[in-house]
Length: 432
Length: 84
Image (cartoon, rainbow over all chains, first blue to last red; front, side, top):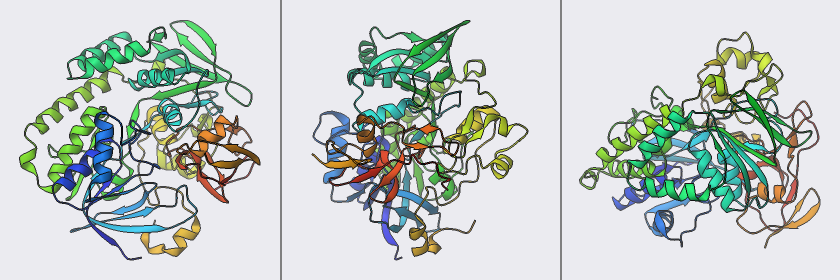
């Protein structure tokens, strides 16, 4: 396989990646923009069209029309290795097509904008069809799922719940309630911090208007989901009282987790909360590798755009364009810290798995099976927890929250591949 | 509008939607069975969890990442098998 040389590769085509790609290309770099989804936009701008008004339409339009940017959608990184002058990325473009094939890319500069995934926590019934991620249901709705008339309970933690509820309602769903595990003081602290950021007040008001009439319950815990072969109801606990709501979907998520897998393969150091550590120029600890957006910490679209701009400028040497961007990025980072504190998970209000609750969905490993283990590696070796199709992307963060096991040892390939692809090019992966 | 086959049933779905959305809109929400035989549906909707995998034109793919195309043959994994 002949490596393809690029001046810059941006991984992830959400707001941060799109902004980084445009900025780096404006600085004269030839940019390859890789994204796993069928179309650019990331989770927040999924389904947005280049023709529409606003930041999403403008960025999508600019990126699509810029001669210095090549967009490769439906492409996933399966392996990555840092080098002195250039970094090597191995990419599969097979998702969703029958044309299997790996591509090896060499990039002088890499900008990681890999975003975040949802944190799921196991509880009885969470494996029933109809129990989905909060962001997951939003993503499904944006990609064609008809939610009109569907009864939805949104539960878990974080401001994403509100955005999901408002978005689903706009699409015709009947949102029965939003159940937030954080208490009112946390919710209020977040609201005040958001109001101090430019533009957020207007966004919050629009959100509130979209949720008029929908009950919002703080201090509320998910207890269990019930149904035979499909979700039929969810039980919540408010104070000492349990209530059961009949519903078609339970959209549940306990915050977002930075997706640092590619960063880990490149050797980028992480911070205390598991996000990629960057300096004021969005440079990681690995020379030539930058990071922007939620992979550096969960903070929303405005911070992601700003960080993408800083990373694009820094990677292409356009320091004069930065002006006060690093200072504004610092303000966004302080907002991130408030967000983390406001919606910190409270053990008493998290779903409590029973011994029979499945923790690893891929391998059917139950909470009771994991008793007695003290770390992730031992549990993996003995129970196959985290060794299935999702490669620990779901149960890894769950085990971190439940048992304090930090998910480590990220290895290529990052996604399951047909054997035929690996047999074609066995040298693209490092030995185990 | 693309026409595809879901478990032998012919349906149309708007271009730009995913196979996952087409399956769910057709009422085919359980997508596979677990090793223990329990029904499983999609969870993350964005390519992380692999719970939405199905066989599309002979290949096992994550349906949330797979756009609908005219003539696709989609089959759910409802037989209990010990998959890798």
